Length: 102
Image 1: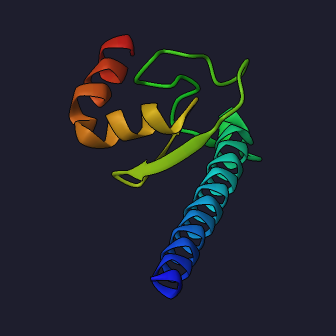
Image 2: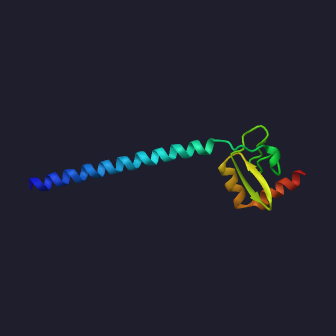
Image 3: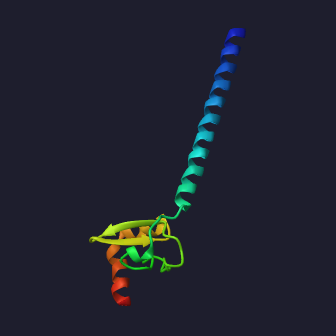
């Protein structure tokens, strides 16, 4: 009975250590991901098809470019990964905004 109790305690401690290490690693990866997302790209707005983020309308001459994508051989810039994702979901919707402004 004593051996069973010792084995049970060791299993519980091992499980606790594994979970703690896993959570610590996940937290570290999330922190690294946040740092990478916030770092602006070394791209100027004059390299883009338009100096506006077509999703939110942000002026990319005044704010850092966080992400880009190529659509129909044109380079578009975005203030965030979120805006890029929204653009990729329906690029024609946002290209229409660009055509309307010209």
